[in-house]
Image 1 (cartoon, rainbow, N blue to C red):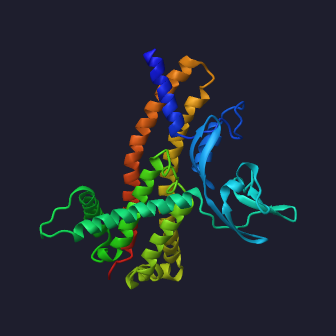
Image 2 (cartoon, rainbow, N blue to C red):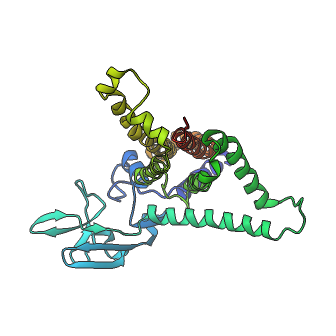
Image 3 (spheres, rainbow, N blue to C red):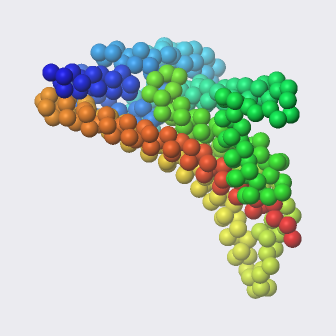
Amino acid sequence: MTKRFFITVLAAIVSLAVPQRLSASGGEGEEFSPKEMVMEHLADSYIWEIITIKGREIAIPLPVIVRSSTGWHVFMSDKICHGGTYKGLYLATEGKYKNKVVEDVGGVQKRPLDISLTKTACGLIFSLLVVLILFLVTARAYKKREEVDYCPKGLAGLMEWLIDSILNNVIKPCVGENYLKFAPYLLTAFFFIFVSNLLGLIPFFPGGANVTGNISITLFMALATMLAVNLFGTKHYYKEIFWPDVPVFLKAIPLMPIIEMIGIITKPFALMMRLFANIFAGHSIILSICSIIFVTAHMGFALNGSMTAVSVFFMIFMNFLELLVAFIQAYVFTMLSAVFIGLAQEKH
């Protein structure tokens, strides 16, 4: 009796922690699809799901801002969810625009200009607010100090340790003597990625947004590093790209400049894909392990109960592992960005 009660409680906790639908279409009599469940929760959305209780979804509608063929429209997403239509706009249920706002123009499905505040966008804003609060609280603690040998405590002390570690052990040795010039960007990138990764592991509102697992976010951050590298590169850096110290026949055939130009593109590409792939894969594994509970739901209590216990155990293990990955990915992105910037600061 005790074992059965324990397994039932574990299944209930998982069901509440990871909002789920019984099938891709929401029908209770249809077969559960792990692939649909995983991809649905990793994809962007016009609503922020909180929980699903007995097939009823509780979610926060987000503002939709689009420019269609009839002009600009601003409305809440609950007007077009679940098959609704608002001024000719609706959510596509299939095709390349699936789960995106579309309209019919001349009998052809087209997607309007969409600048809506989706779940990922709201998660990004929330992560930035958390980072801003962390910085402001730390700065306020230092402004209040009265003694020269003031030793920060609590949150300010933790932030000082993290900032000092990244600044002196990563940014300074990788960038070189101009490290203070790039420290604000690199520190901001580290804390934004770290906080976003941690919030992404929280399975309930306001966490759960797949911010750094969205390739658009990692693309933008990689482009920011690319601009920092190439806009502030020294003349010797560009000399090595366009007129390197190589034999004359290699200068006549611009092989080295072509290779260097490819390197300018592949470096940020590596930053983008490394962060995106690691975070996306981690979330996918956790959701896949969770789906085992619902896949075995109709296979009898003994099998479902045992697989529930195994699934919960591995989910707890993976979440602890993802805590480590959250820091490692922020550290690696910051370190590689600092290395690329340092390479562009070379002297004669």
